Amino acid sequence: MAGRRALITGGAGGIGLACARRLLAEGAQVVLLDKSADTLPSAAGAAPVACDVTDPGAVAAAVERAAGLLNGPADVLVNSAGVYKITPLLDLTPREWDDVLAVNLRGTFLAGRAVAAALIAAGQPGAIVNISSTAGLVADAAEPSAHYNASKAGVLALTRQMAAEWAPYGIRANAVCPGVIDTPMLRMMDDPETGAAYLRTGVPQGRLGSAEEVAAAIVFLASDDASYLTGAAVPVDGGITAI
Image (cartoon, rainbow, N blue to C red):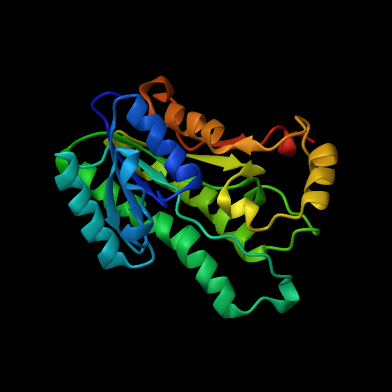
């Protein structure tokens, strides 16, 4: 990834931060976006930029600022900003629905559009990797999160459309679908007994995945090794969607 210019939304922790570290280790320049610059780790070796991904003006300004920091438009975008909530459908309010879709789906659209527009204007190719989820592929009555599931299914449809429309400009778009990954967002929902039972019965590999394992798949998709791969959804889930 030497010479590549990467922009990562939701870069303060979890999968986004793991991607930043992997990209930096492989020689890329990296800018991290998160809602508050105070939450971005200055020691990561990446430039921090505060940005609310639900705000079109803020996203456009952040992408432009990132281009200045990177000495050119970002040619790798990792859309990792996301929120996760559990609420049964009958209790789900329109406000809760809108809040989750605003970050997970609208934010992915806004960042992807801004980065693609900058690349097309510069006549440069690039790669976009969007973070979906196995929740965008399968449902689970024991984990009611319709707004999250719908947002992540939307990310998959959006990724395919990005791939179809932007291929003529040399821009590839793919998605990863993480399963049960050991991140701060997962630990907020931690129920050790239920979690252990799920790993035994629901995950063929019988363990949590790591943010670094997801980052490895993301960096592959962003690299030239995946040059003929676009519009794909890659589960990184220990086999959850295989059963």
